[in-house]
Amino acid sequence: MTKATFFATVSPGIEDIACEEVSDLLGCKATPDIGKIFFEGELESVYVLNLKSSILNRIMIQLCRGEFSDLDDLYRLVKDLDYGWIIDADQSFAVRSERVGTHSFTSIDVSRAVGQAIIDSYREAHGRRLKVNLDEPDVEFYALVRNQEFLLGVNTSGGSLHRRGYKVYMHPAALKPTIASAMLRIGGWKAGKSLIDPMCGGGTIPIEAALKVSGIPPGYLRKDFAFLKLKIFTEDDFWDLRSKILSHKAVECVAEIYGMEKFKQHLEGAIRNSEKAGVRKAIEFKLGDATKSFEYPEGEFDLVVVNPPYGIRMIPGGSPVRLYSGFLKALKERADGAVLVLITAAHRRFNEAAEENSIEVLEKRIILHGDLRARIFKCKI
Ligand SMILES: C[S@@+](CC[C@H](N)C(=O)[O-])C[C@H]1O[C@@H](n2cnc3c(N)ncnc32)[C@H](O)[C@@H]1O
Picture 1 (tube, protein in one colour):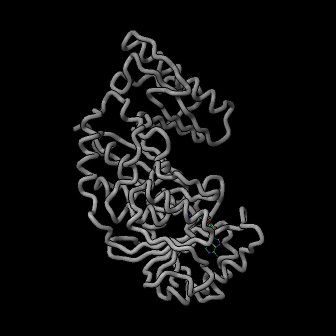
Picture 2: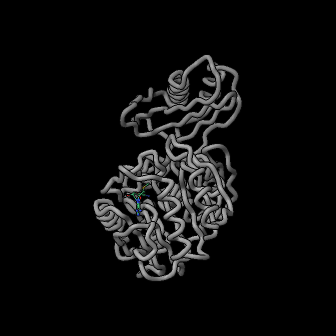
Picture 3: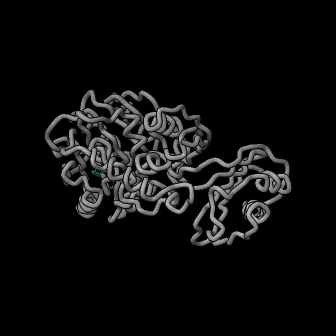
């Protein structure tokens, strides 16, 4: 078994939750950074991580981490490494770069310098010139320049893991499944509990909740993981492991999961998404208004996890002020004592409504949902 250092990208604001998940999956300690986490493990952990992680976006094998002074320096750092173990002479590659801070060069310059250094290193060590393919590379390198820090990795995931493959219906204000999963972890979601998302839209939160308690790995619909093209990994090993993991899924869902939504079109979309995800039977969907306590499904709820409208892409004629206070009033009547985990960019409106309805905020955090600065609140109803 070969040891490797990994880093994984995550939505900024939930790095600590991502570290907890990696510790649970690999039994190792992970260290948070901004928008990413670092950890060590066996190279083969790549299979389990890509299949089972519900919070990470992209998982990279770290190739280099250090300080640099200018682009020539950066070129030297990258050229000093050997790439023969990760890429075949006949494979193509691309470098994707991100740059944070003030520099005299752009991220395109970083990609160019790193790309040239990889080509030169490979040619010196193996006598062949690697091909660049920016559209569909076999191997994708990720370079981050943050002030004077430099980080280089090889992408094992490909496209971000938040693209699970079950969204056959795309809700216009869909939540990223990775953020939904982090919210479920914040709420302590586990088998034996009951959960409702009373404004479920395309169903992301109940679907992620159902995948978790059914033992279905969030990445099981994906067949396009980047590691399948990396020469250090064996496709057969991965498919064997995947079959083994899938054979452990629960026969029956051992939790109560409800999704409610006011608009039929979204509810039907949520049902289609849950079918594609393989968890339709685990979720009870209901058309209903979250501000009317009598429209909630029967039963008791331990946990309410919800992504209400923020008012930015608000439903025509709606008012987030009235919606938030009406919603929290209904929750007080229908789920008194339950834990509420809610994400919103309209945090002032939420705070006012929470105070008005004597809902105690236990913790809050800022999170980037795409470009939007939102907050996740954990409350006692
Ligand atoms: C931000 S979206 C939720 C998106 C969802 N988390 C997803 O990933 O697809 C908010 C949803 O709340 C629904 N909604 C708004 N007011 C509602 C109400 N009073 N009762 C139930 N649903 C409501 C909207 O129709 C919308 O689908």
